[in-house]
Length: 225
Ligand SMILES: *Cc1c(COP(=O)(O)O)cnc(C)c1O
Image 1 (cartoon, rainbow, N blue to C red):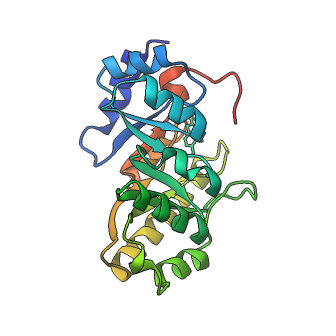
Image 2 (image 1 turned 60 degrees about the vertical axis):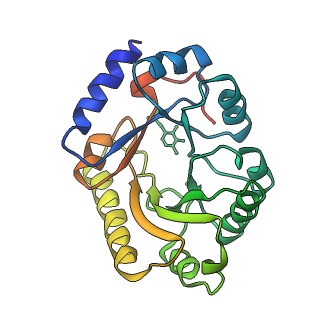
Image 3 (image 1 turned 90 degrees about the horizontal axis):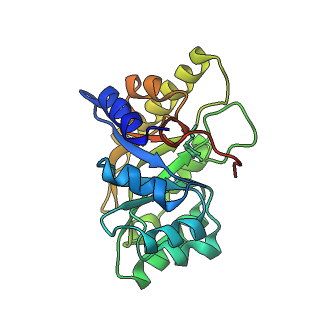
């Protein structure tokens, strides 16, 4: 894998768009992450809190670490000191826990609300109803140590690019709707996290601001989790 070249190619497709690259380094060793770092990449995404914490301790301090995987509330405390964006908030309970741990660290942690847009039952994420419930909660303005900065979604795992595009369009439509409807001290609608190795080109066309790309940079993973 020519990591440097892969990053250059992807960054090229981002030119002229609003989107930034999150290099998804889950399961990959520090040497490969450093290769990407030395090619100029500064945002890395991980899906396991323990793994992200270990890597953050070993690697340069100007890396922005993004949590992109499902988060268990009891583990939030380990990443609260350093995580720069959590893409995968999928419950009110989790949002409250992030707020609590951010307060302990005297930080404000940026969060994306993860929407369920795929056909598959297995993917995590909020329904539209659950999204509106969170955004309409009387208790939301009191969460002073989080900031909701956007939405995240994963398309169905399929070769049907028309379906993927449809799902990204639906997420963008939800984004535009909540952006017009909800505001507040801890809400600022800047980010739409969608697009992975197989579909980031579509995601960019449909308005993504953060693409999460792993295998197209680092090669395929031996195991997935
Ligand atoms: C692993 C992962 C990615 C990256 O997937 P690739 O197909 O390797 O680009 C993106 N988003 C999430 C949530 C992931 O878990």
